[in-house]
Every structure is written in C-alpha cells, then in structure tokens.
Length: 470
Image 1 (cartoon, one colour):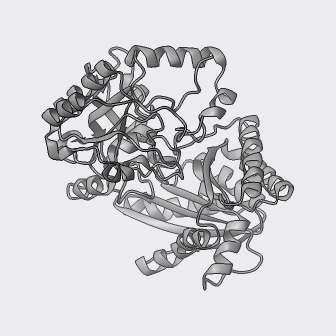
Image 2 (tube, helix red, strand yellow):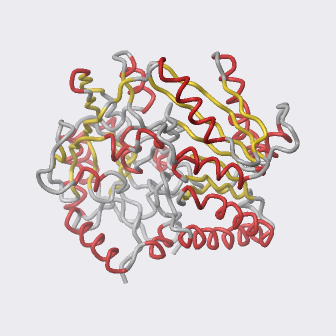
C-alpha cells in the first residue's frame, strides 16, 4: 500500500489540547501547510503527519510518548531530517516529535573526557565546543553542520574517521531515553568500563527510534591529535587501489581517513571540473594520518610504503594547508559533479570486507553494463564502506525499473561477499524489505520480540527498520 493510500489515524481535538498543555500551544503544529515540511527526510519520500510537536526537555518527551501510547497514535521522532532512507517519514501518519529544539550541551567534562548533550545538538556545534577544550567526538558525517547527535545515534552514523576512531556505538557511554510505554530509562555508565547488566546503550544506537526516544547522551570525547598529514595516491585501476587499501590496513599505523574514488567517479571530476587529472588514473585514495608531531614522519612513511603496490601512478604528501586543500579538491569536486549529472540519483551505502572491495567494484561494473545504469562508487575504503551511486532519473519509470533491478542484484552481491547492506545510512523504508536476506528468521524473530518489549503497542516509528513479521 502506498503512503498516500494508507489510512491515516484521526487525532481528536482533546489530544491536540493535551499536547499543547505539555509543550505549549506555540509548539504544536496541526495545519497541513505547517506540518508539510516534517513529512520529508533526505530521501524522496513524503507523508503528511497529523501533528508536529516540539519538545524542549526530557519530561515533555515522556509525557508525549505516554499520551500517544494511550491513544495508540504513531509517534516518529526526528532531528533535522538529513537521513536518506525514509526512516523519519511518517508513512503511518500520526505525530512527528521534533527534537531539534532540545539543543543544549549540558556538560563538557575534560577531566573525564565526556560530554553530556541533548539530542538536538548538531554534530558541528558539539565539535566546536569540544575543540575549545582540546577534544572532539569521533563521528564526523558529511552533514555535520546540519545533522543532530540524536540522528547520529539513531542511525549509528559515522564518517571517514570511523576507520580509526569508531562509530557512535564505540563513542557513547550512556543514554537517557523513553520507551514506547512512556517509561524512563537510563542505560550505560559515565565511565569507560562497566559490565553490569545488558548493553542497552549499543542496542538503542542504530535502532532508528523504534525502541525508545533518546533524550540525552553521555558521549566519549577524544583528544585532538597534535598533527595531521594528508596524502593523495592515484592508481592505474581499482584493483591496484584495493590491494593498497588491504596493505595499508594490515600494517600497524591506522589512518584517520582512508577515502576511495573509482574510475567512474574520477571521470565525473574530469568532465565537470577544471581539475588536471592524468588520463591513466583509474582509482584514487585520499589518506590522512594523525598523532604526535614527532610520530608523523614515521606514520607517513609506513602508510606510503604499504600504498606502493603494482599499479601505483603517483603518491603526493601535503606539507601545508594550501597543499592539503589542493589534494582534497578532487574529492570535493565529486559531489557537485554528481549533482550536475543526476540531481535525483540513488545513493546507497554498503560494506564489504576490505579485501573484497575489488570484487564488489567489478560486479558493479558488470551490473552497470547489464542494466545500462551508470554507477559511480566512492567512500570509506578503510572499513569497506562504499557509497554506490546509481545515476537514474526517478521521473523515467523504465530507467527506474532497471535501477531497482541493479539495486536488487547489488545487495545480493554484497551479502555473497560477506558484507552488509547498510553501513551508516540506516535501513528505514528504503532497505527494510531486503533485511530478511541478511538476517536469519530466528534472529529476526528475536529482534521483533525485543521491539515488543520496548514498545508493546508498536507506536514508535512503525514499519521501519525491520520487515513485518509473517
């Protein structure tokens, strides 16, 4: 059933009045024109909620959840809507709970290397304030200026630094949250060690708002490295670049970023920018290492040695800020080029073992030839997280049919190579129906049972993340 065809729940005026009592009349929207923008995320999906409610504190979230649970109303929590999988699209109607105004950094504690924040704080704001104390929070998605910490936790969104510093799951110590029954819970600890009870913190992170609404997080901060060095390495083909990635990740120095662009991506940059790239370049790596200043020369040498595999064309190390900007110019030119060619492209993120990257790229090239869909690949090579871009026009039904055929085959290939169908974009609606290919029926049943324990009436983000039970 399509979103437009789905029967939407009715919200009585008495319920609207109760919502206004909880957060104030000015923080409840009900007019369709006012609610319209909160039916989107960064996918192409849209559905109109019956109401939008802005919360400012934990107790308001608790009371809103209790009210929606009592009335059996769908409740979809969201931040700024930067997700790409439809996870915050209210396709069952109901109430959208916006957490963007819960934007306080409650505490930064350098002595214990922690920050305590509300979910509406943007990633960039946290990074800026942590930096004043000499720290950073490792997750660094490209949407950092806009995306919220709550969204980062809901999707377990990471970014380039994950190859060395990990994802939100490795960098969050504890949470405060409200379950689907409106029960208040605290998970985890504020220390870097703690094994009492089950690890509900890691369970809630990545659950896309289907288990509980996160209202506060204790985040583990990392000291900013004293120095950083950037390298750009070009190769004849993707197989050479993939061999280099495997070699780099097999030696002791772990880069803080190891980014990959395939031949198609490089062609895009050549065609739609003024960058001077040699015609024989068929793949490229952007590498950064960080650490104490006295260590950087050794780190650069170790990574450079590992990167020198057969097929290497050029290895450049930046020594100044201007040289760093010049090296990153190629990578930064890619997204505008893709937007020029296919502004409505399909963007998927998948993960395979690092050693299987060339197998995946080869299969994607075959898929491109078979379906006639241009496929451009780039991403976080250090952990095998590849962003696969299908340059298809959603206004062309026949082309989209071929694109979805390519997607279906791609997911099968990823799983055959020992990978996973989502690295950091989440599942939402876009990948929900493919989950059963990756997770066995018994495990899926256990996951649905867990979901019912947190949210017996199924009000929290219904229909997302897990396929419906038979």
